[in-house]
Length: 102
Image (cartoon, rainbow, N blue to C red):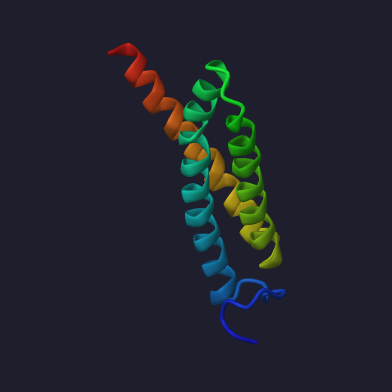
């Protein structure tokens, strides 16, 4: 078993902790990509561009695939990744609110 192979990791091993840190970072990056692209998709839909539907499905599929891969590394990686997505959502919302105020 290698350090980051997608199998059950021993409880509290260095690889277990590493999967949490990596899951949080990857989830944050995936969340930033997911939520930053939402504005573009919404504008396209509002303008009647039907390719936005394909973009929306792609956004959801990519986020789902990232979370699925994290689940292969265990519940700790999946939960950390989901937390990263939520942190990214909060960051994008805070940036949007700051832009709206100026």
